[in-house]
Length: 307
Image 1 (cartoon, one colour):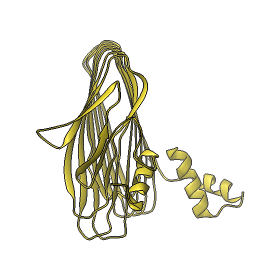
Image 2: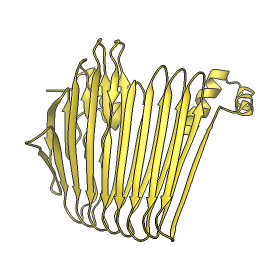
Image 3: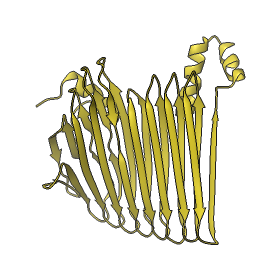
């Protein structure tokens, strides 16, 4: 069946799409598989033992993408989905995921996704995941994504995750294990408002020689919202690791940033950074002298910070 107006809006917010995508895709709507399609190099199979899909990308696949968005437009749906990605040797692909919830009722709507990535030697994945909530009902929008990553020798995974609006509660967990010369790069953008709660946990095992990771979170907490950032990088070989949390706190919000690094090898080089603060007054004044109101100036600064 065609998408309705609410579903199209959610799809646009999380995947920059207005209709069902072309090429390889899986679209899940209101707890059911709405449609899927495989391509010559990317095969998508529905799991038979539990909700979710298996995605197989052939060795050597280049410059291709797969979309796997999830939409909830009915109140009261709670689901747990398992998606496994098997990336062949020397492949280079983009995977676009994400979840959009529109809750116009009084019941909680919740999506929990467990995504497991298995990258073979010298493969490369860019993974984009956006979360978005809307609706004028009293029911909560809840999203709890879990990501597990195994990177073989020379593999690279770049993750871009964003949650900017409408999610009342989220518990986001990412765990990764890296082999020789493997690289994991993570860029997280997060904003909470109202009474929202967001917890982010990263745990990276740098097992391989010359493996490396760069984990960066940028967050804004507004109103009475609360955020927790946890990051733990384990240097178990000659490796390099960097974890960073930069946050802006506003109104009566609260933020806890807990970066941790542990070295178990003499040639492990690890760095952690955390900074939390309010918007500087001189930044606001400078923009207001250009004709912006205080609120407009705040939005301009936040937009640049989360860009």
